[in-house]
Length: 478
Ligand SMILES: [Zn+2]
Image (cartoon, rainbow, N blue to C red):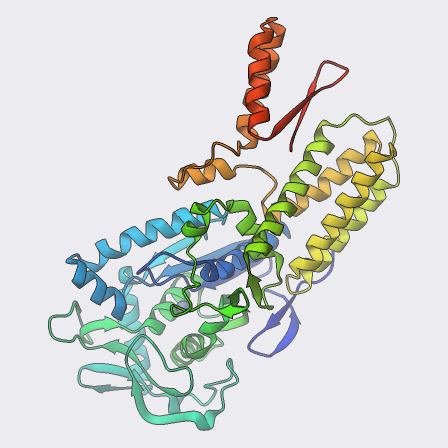
């Protein structure tokens, strides 16, 4: 296997990935601001991060990933007050929903998931450190970072430093993307607003300081990888770098990986267009978790992904094709020996790895697997596929699924776990296997009426059974 190469936003180049400590990857992920349900654009970034961590793990790295929840900001404080509940209670339900959505998409849990409001003391300490180094000033009880003290400001986002407005301040959580200004590290409370009483005064943290302090607390002062959506590059990640490096004097992050935007029907998602779909809405409309996962992972993360009904249907078809191929491999009866397909499978595995090594080029990796499936299906149709080919082809397919995780059909169970119905028509692998076993038992007991009933039930739900000559049974989806 070759080197892993990542496009690094910081340097603007593709670079060979070498972690600071051999065999170990320390990675930080900006998590959601939990004031509503996450949408499909958010999940594009989270699916990319899942592919990244699965790939690194599959290559033998020990991954330590930290993801935060931003559970305090302007909107959260306003919404919680309007709902008459505390911010903790208000954000709890969105955190729970987000974690359930992640499970539906088959996203692995990061090693550490942390809430900003559990780390106020860490943030206060970091702000004190910045003050000792002369990087801050106070105004009306708020504390600001003085960008002029950090000459490297703008390096990540390639921002023109002349756009920096010296002394101009911004202290809301929503930022103007056009220019850089001194940003709030600590915000004084407005009258009647929720606040923490601390050594640096009453108030609450700014958004950027949360990520710097939690990232460094758990991952050390220099991280291997920091990921996020491209819209976070400026000002959020730029500000994280300024704060962290000013406090420690060390490089904060070695590789910055940013996922591009997701477009819906070729348009940017926006409230006014009404094209912001939450994951739940899409699942309620009858789309499968596996189709969504597949679609979101199929376009390389540095390219824009155009999300359409049609692309979602195609994704469902692609997943179905691979699932049926895996079934055919496992259930098929082939002549003894091996054919050129064994060698063909090994080549596909190499091409699959090469695709992912190349800055996670998922499209290239997927093409390798689909080409293999096509060739193997053709060989089976022609009677050229051999018993000895099964293991090497399955091995490549398992390699694929360790990263893409769509082969096991558990869509129905995942929908049920989210409390979504409509899964009756689409039984999962486990349920089918159970019904097939019951039918076999009925046949053995010579209860042919019961056996026929189960066959019909499965047929009604799109599952075809085929009895084999040796008394076994094969099934597939229509
Ligand atoms: Zn962040």
